[in-house]
Structure formats: C-alpha cells, structure tokens
Amino acid sequence: MASDRIVFFDTTLRDGEQSPGCSMTTQEKLTMAHALEDLGVDIIEAGFAMASEGDFAAIATITQAIRKPRIASLARAKTEDIVMASRALQFADRARIHVFLASSDLHLEYKLKMSRAEALDQTAECVRLARSLVDDVEFSPEDATRSERDFLVKMVQVAVEAGATTINMPDTVGYSTPEEYGRMFAEVRERIPAIDKQGVILSAHCHDDLGLAVANSLAAIHNGARQVECTINGIGERAGNAALEEIAAALYVRGDRFGVTSGINLSQLYPCSQVLGQIITFRPSPNKAIVGDNAFAHESGIHQHGMLANPLCYEIMTPALVGVAKTHLVLGKHSGRAALRHRLEQLGFTLSRDELQHTYYRFVALADRKKNIYDYDLVGLLPDQIRERRQEPISELA
Ligand code: KIV
Ligand code: ZN
Image (cartoon, rainbow, N blue to C red; front, top):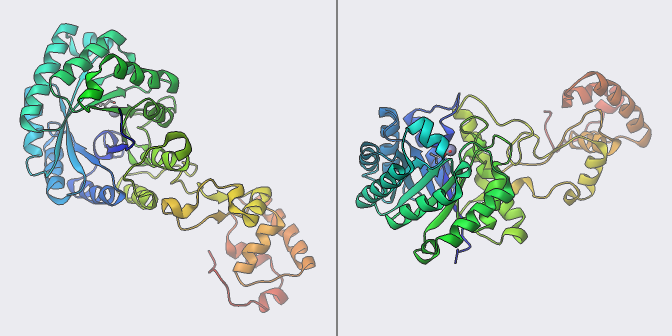
C-alpha cells in the first residue's frame, strides 16, 4: 500500500543543467543546493559523476555541505559509471545511485545496439553492483513510455529483484498523456506485487515536449507513484522537465483531489526560482504558473474590481503562500476606475468623482498608446491642484 507522502526528487542540477544556457559551476550548484535544502526537497540529484570532472567535483562538494536532503548521482548501467558515482558520493550522509538503461526497442536497437536479453542481464548486474556500494538505488528504464509493456514489466521486475529501492519510469521524450501515463503505473504496480511488498517506491519523471509534464506527473501520483522528479522553473532537456513549483502547488491547492503530503516549504518556491534565475541565463516566462512575473498580476477592470472586492474572486492561492510579496494590479488599457482610484490613493492622491472621471479618460488614452504604465505616468496625468494636495503615500512611486 503506497503511503501518502510524496518524495520530491529535484533534478535541476542534473537534467535541468542539461539544457542550453543552464550549465552551472560547482559554486553555483552549491548555491542552488542550499536553496533546494531550504525548499525542503527530499533528494537532490547533484549531477552525473562520470560526465565530467566538474560534475564529479560538484557532487562531492554538495555531499559535504548539504545535510538534510539525500544526494544522488546519475550513472549509466556501466561498472565505471557506478563506481565513479559511489566515489563522488562517498562523503554523503545519505547517498543514492541512480542507474538508467533504455527499455524501448528504439533505443536498444539504434542507440545501444543491445538485445533485450543483454539489457536484462545488464540491469541485474548493475543494480546489484550499485546496491553493494550504497543502500539506496534507483533504477530508470529510459524511454519507458515508448517501451513494449511486457518487456518494461520484465525489466522493472529484474531491477526490483536485484535490489532497486526506487523504480523511476521516465517519459523521456514527453510523449505520453495523463491517462496513459497513469495507467502504466497502475499496471506495473499490479503486475509486480514485490513493489508493494518490498516497499519499492515508484517514481514519475516527465518531460514537457507536449506541455503535459506536470499533468502526467500528477496522473502518476494518482496511480500510486510516490516520488516525482522535477526541476525548478521546469528547466531541462528540450522543452524541459516537470516544474517542481507547479506540482507542489497543485498538490497543496487541490489537496482535495490528491490527499498527499510533502516536505516542501511552499513559501520558498518563489525565492528558490529567483535564485535559479540569477544563476542561469534566462528567467521563467512572465506567464509561467506560480513563479512568473504575471502569475499574481491582474490587468482587466473586471478582474481588478473583483480582486479589490475579494481576492478569492480571481486568485486560487495567495501570493504569500508561494513566497511572492504581493498581488499586482497592473494598470493598462483594460483597467477600470476602481483600480486607478486604488493606485492613486496608495500614491497619496484622493480624487473626487469628477476628478477621477477626468483622469480616467486621460489614462485610457495614454494606455492605448503605451504598453506599460508606470506610477510616474499616472502622476503626470494629474493636474497641479491635485498634485499639490498629495498626502502621505502608502506606497512609493514605481
Ligand atoms: O528523461 C530521462 O529518461 C532521464 C533518465 C536519465 C532518468 O533523464
Ligand atoms: Zn529526463
């Protein structure tokens, strides 16, 4: 029986780093690892020890500085990778080796030139080797979602028998759909009773090529997955990985649907996203859920009026919940009088009905010409007699 706690496995420093503009120095990875520790992730995949000296050094450094989360290194199903991963992890209080080997015929035939039988032998051998070095071993059948189902089940069974403690079934190319991905978890769990008997954790790892990574991860949770692999701001190969902040917020806001818990400190979601944005070469798009600049911004008059009456009208969570300072009522051509009056009052200007009406016409004419309206623009619209009676502002000009 699956517990109700979701293990958050963050792979920002490994899968996330594997994308253009995201490579990080050891120092930058360490800064990010501290932010992830504050966020409360359970496992940090710090890199791929065999990939480069830099990755090895980053993993080793992180194991010595970070104490709360378990630290993982990726390894191909090869002796040298697994030994290298265990060396990089030698100072970790709690270490995990994450072994992967493709399970789809496409990858086996064209990429690895390996038969199915060879792949099963290698799985057993490598998982056993990893288990002889650390007590926590994750196995991933790469491209699980495009693998023939009976063979996938066989490979997972072999990995479980060899001692894997977590089985991660990645949607490596972001091909699956929520219903299909969820069903795969239900089926594998049903066909391999040892998973529940031995307390093996099933894990979701989704890429966003069809924009379904978060939906697929949530479907997996719905079907018994108890670990999710994700990255901050959803960075990762191609279109990215499932965004940690979206999964964590969805599990909390829609707790009625999922009924699970996690160790994520939601108020660190935005700060953590900001730390990453300062390290890599790009920030999340403005309309990115949870952490984008516009995630808590409202421009249209109808929405602003609703927000001022009761924020629940247009916000399903408070900005404070995820560590964002406040809601922004952005003034633009769709804004109404209520929002204009509200902002002017914050800036220290109280207007009569007629004055507001007059200012509002001038404001709309300006907003038709200008994409962003700043406080200075608003003050510029006011006649001298209003400016002269300015009171103590609640908010400074921005
Ligand atoms: O997407 C993928 O298949 C991976 C594996 C290495 C887990 O990142
Ligand atoms: Zn991946």
